[in-house]
Amino acid sequence: MSDAKPVFSAKGRKRLAIFLVLIITSLLATGFVWATKKVNITVDDKELTIITYYSNAKDVLAQAGLTIGPSDEVRMSTEKLVNGTHIQVYRAIPLWITYQGKTTQIVSGQPTVGEAIAAMGISADNIELTPDASTPVVPNMNIRAVVLTEKLVNEQVEDPIPVVHQSDANLEKGVEQMTSEGKAGTKQITVKKYFADGQEVKSEIVGETVLVPAQPQVIQVGSRETVQTSRGNMRFRRIAYMEATAYHPNDGSGSGITATGVRARYGIVAVDPDVIPLGTRLYIPGYGLALAADTGGAIVGDKIDLCMEDYDEAYAFGRRTMKVYILGD
Image (cartoon, rainbow, N blue to C red; front, side, top):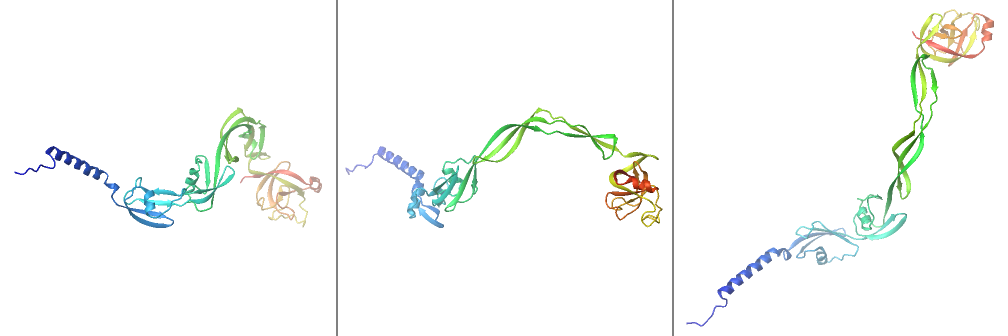
C-alpha cells in the first residue's frame, strides 16, 4: 500500500476553486485594462491611428510619440477612452485680446474665440466678441471683447401739444381756424441706455408717466361746400386766391371777341387754362358770377383778368389778390 498523501485536502480543494472563481471574475470585470483599442488622433493637420492598451489620452499620445505642451488642448470624443475614440490635439497659438481698453497677448490652445475668452476668466454674459464666439482661432488673431452694460435713467421732458381737428359746417371747405392754442405738458420718461466699454451706443424709452397733462390745440376745419351768390347758394369745388387785374372789351385787338369766340363783357374773365379750364363757372366776391372764357399772354399761373365795361372802372381796379370760387358742374 502506498504512503502518498493528496496534495490538497477536500477542504483545500474547495478553497482553491473559490479562489480561482474570484480571479476569473476579477479578470472578466477588469479585462478592458488589457484589451486593445483602436484610437484615432488628429494633430498638426495629420490623422493618426493607434492600437493601444492604454486607457488615458496622455499615455496614448506618448505612445504615438507626440509631445504635448502645457498650453495645448486635448479633447476626446468620448468620456472615457474606448475602442473608436477620437483624440483631437489643438496646439497653443498666440492671440491678441483687447479687453477693457487693454490689449494683451496670450498663448492658448482653445479652438474657438469664445473658449479662448472663457479660459481667461472673462464672462460671456455681458460681452460682445469680434469675431463672434464660434469663430475658429488662427495665429495672431485680434479678438475684441467689448463689455456691454445697461442703465435705467428717469428724465423729465416736455409733453408736446396735441392737435385736434374738428369739423365746422359754418366754415367753408378748405378754411381752418384755431380756437384754442393749447399748452405743452410735462412727463417723466424712463430711458434704457446701452453702453459698449462705457460709451453710450443707443437708448430707448421703456416707460413714461404724465406729470402735467398737455392741453390740446383745437383747429376748426371748414366743411361747408356752398357760397351765397346773387343766384342763391351755389356749390363750389375749391377756392383759389389769385392775382386779379381788369380789362375793357376793346383792349387788345379791339374786336371784343374772346379766345372761346364769345363777346367780351362783364362776367367774362381770362384765365390760364392749365389752372382753370375754359368754360369753368366762377364766383368772385366783389365781382360776382363769372365764366372762364378768355386767355391772355400775361395771364399765366394763378392770375385772372376780369372784364369791366367801363374804362375808368378797369383802370381803377388795378392789381389785387382776390378769392375765387371754382364752382361745381
